[in-house]
Length: 277
Image (cartoon, rainbow, N blue to C red):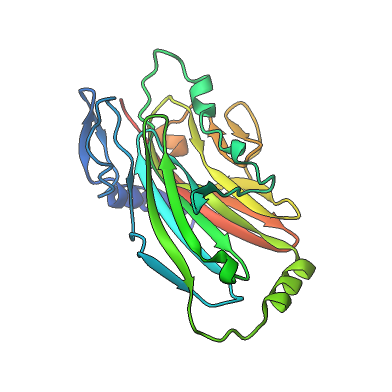
């Protein structure tokens, strides 16, 4: 396959991806724009923004886990503005991330560089994982996934209980293994899909945890080179990618976020779709 054929295949692939993910047309303050498949980010609220709603599989009332094994709780939500997600255990905020600092949830970098007269759509879907390692009876609790914007907060709950299965390892051996191998890099919050007006900035989430501290990097397309900070791109201290002036030809497609440390590697992808106001 020659270079021209490669380019045509890539263009066709990008167009097909867009068609599959964006078949719906909505209206935003009188201006038409393409929507996200059947995300159906709920009806408009009194603020004029799309309300936050949970996507994907709903939480079961009870989640069962095997003692001394690992379990992952997953949650996804969409809205405009694009929400952030955090977790509660019996009503108490759980701190995720390298610093374990919940104040690291800053989600408004894009707003700080947006022109006041520039319309922004801020429509997106976000995913989150809560990693519970070497679980024991002390981990039995009510866990809540909380999705929120500056306008709204919603939550869904599951009760974690230990089942009667017999684990192949003790809690002590599980913790010892993890102590020797460190905590592998794991991404716990990321943007899955984002739709934004051309010319606007976007902030794509990618928050990771692990020990040693993971290095977070981004690339555009699966085989693309690592994105370096320049006049258009900035990898923020919390791992998010800030793109300062998006356009369809240069920015539409998949972005890949990779978190890596000496104990492991994790990767997620984000689909970005610039659209006309």
